[in-house]
Image (cartoon, rainbow, N blue to C red; front, top):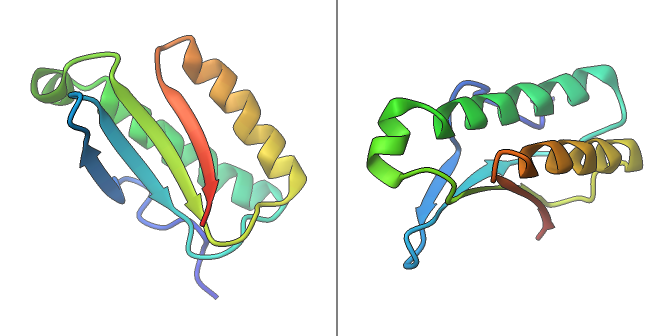
Length: 104
């Protein structure tokens, strides 16, 4: 079975909003389980996204403080993963980045 988060060093989807903001999307290909491995995949992917958002190239193209990260899941992650997302969301808010979980 494939990992629920792949291509850890790449942005899955980038969407430019009409208001000038930018949405970056992490696409989950399967459920995130409450295990160290899945937690690490999520942390690594989010870190890759934040590194991109704070890169000189990104800032020169999109500006600073207008990028949000969305986690798109087909299945609700397990509760401990949701708790982790909440903690990361709180941390990223300090850097003017919103993190959202959407189950579609």
